[in-house]
Length: 221
Length: 221
DNA sequence: GTCTATAACTTGATAGAC
DNA sequence: GTCTATCAAGTTATAGAC
Image 1 (cartoon, each protein chain N blue to C red):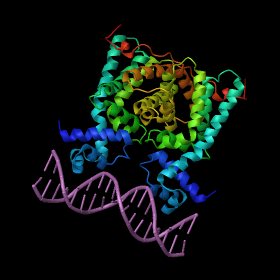
Image 2 (image 1 turned 45 degrees about the vertical axis):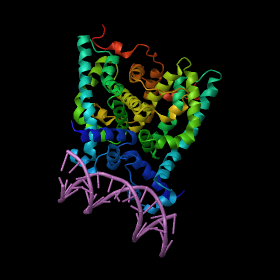
Image 3 (image 1 turned 180 degrees about the vertical axis):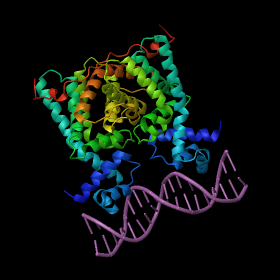
Image 4 (image 1 turned 30 degrees about the vertical axis):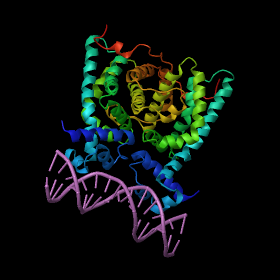
């Protein structure tokens, strides 16, 4: 709708993603966007409100698509539970697909999400307000897909998964890429398939009753 | 050795972990540490050098222990490859153990690592310099433990694992903890066992040849 | 809606007395 | 080694002309 407003949103999204929220000043945003400093306070109210606008712009449609995909799977499954892979795909695909179409800045937004995830509780405050119902719906579907997994273990594995997701969205580890001998290209559909395969195997792993230090060299074998 | 110096290191570690590097001012550090602003520039040179000192203080002994554990496992295994679980334990245990003894601020440092991991390339610059050889040693052990996994898939799965690790170190997702019905207590040894079980299953997952959109509701079945 | 000008404050860093 | 005092630059935010 508004040219200046969108210009600010796009630029803020990119710089927040590249440098983080705290390290990005409003002045660097207006410089890159080619707009005036006052415009940022006119259209948004403050730096924090700008971040919220950046996040909400993309996460709201993504959340709606998540629920729609989950419902599709649920209808197809009838009374049977939706499979683990399908639950994960319904949740993850909207984010990854967004990154696929290069026209929009979806790829940038992916990195922003991955980054904000670690930066303070900025993101949790913004997202919790508008997507806690989505989280609960998916948590319920997940429990149905994994009926034998105790809730506490499920909780831990969900945290592991969120971390793996955030890392993937962030674009992976620089240290690691330096060691790899091959060029690493990013194909969202490809990454999604790999991530789902990895995580679903993790979710189905046997629960570690044996204490790990049993494995210590010297203590046994 | 020096009281003021250690006081600054401890406080900086805590505040960087809680708020992130960019969002933490030197003045908030000296206020909490009860020292003078100039002392921070006297003992360290700059804010960035302070961060480096904070990280190096703990990661250097951890890296040495990592290598020692790996060598122990390798000697015990003889000519056979060290198992995937053992490679992971050798790498992860030092960090988790550090968090266990509550006397030192190891728990805080864990959170700092998880946080810095996402914040810019601050950490990668600091760590790469002093632990790239550790990474290469472990990468080699990992390839031996998983000889059938193609390098590119191994690379992806390493990234997933690093993300899960960082998330665990960071202390997990606030959004998630709000949904959980049970009190979440952190026991490092316990978390380590759960993480290794999850990740090793992920590493051994079948490679996803099938494109994910085959699973889409409506496209088949 | 967009601009200039500026207020009000915080930041990292340093000089120099003790 | 530790302090005070201060610098120079950068920060968010706002008032008010156009």
